[in-house]
Length: 260
Image (cartoon, rainbow, N blue to C red; front, side):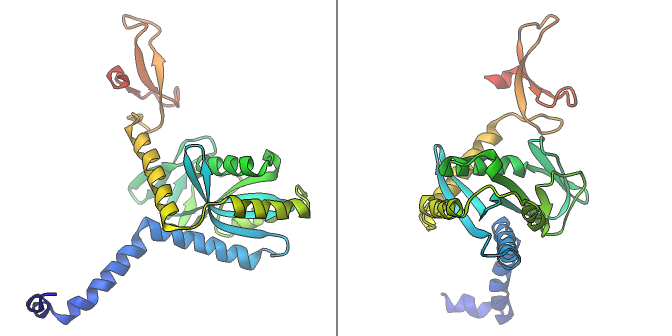
């Protein structure tokens, strides 16, 4: 390093540089996601009986179109619980059927993918790997952080330790002890090795999915999904346009030229 430059900068500034880097990392979505996952890992390990519930964390599985990454899998005689973690703050609005939910912090609002829909692929991938039925696998979403649900949520969408109550509430035995051991072994043998290379592949796959979604026209009113429709009456009868999938609740449309 140039000693002239180093001497020109006060020593206090040099101490602030690593602090600034640390603050940036802590505020990043990556760190918040990892912090949320770690919190769920800790509560699951210390709150669930290890002789009955087996926790497998951070599982990446191969799929036909790439990979899918599952935050937590909890295996028990009472079923297999596929847990998706969201570390968010603010007010959360949504329901089971909506494709996008809303996060509101004061006057700022943003849409994010319905985590139940996000977890659906995880569940189906796991079912395919293990040969399990819908009755044997549960989708669970847990929000951590300073967030509040402002709309009624399904019982499998929880906040904080609520996911533990949901898991414990399942008391019907759906798997034998032999099947539980087989599920754990098959997940461990079927998962991809936790390596930097596989992580990068998964991140690249997710970026491709997001890029494709962003290229699709969105509803100008509610930012929801658009579907192709045909004009049935009037001088433009027979021509095509994009209409909001939420019609008639939302009547947003996009010009037909975007279909090309």
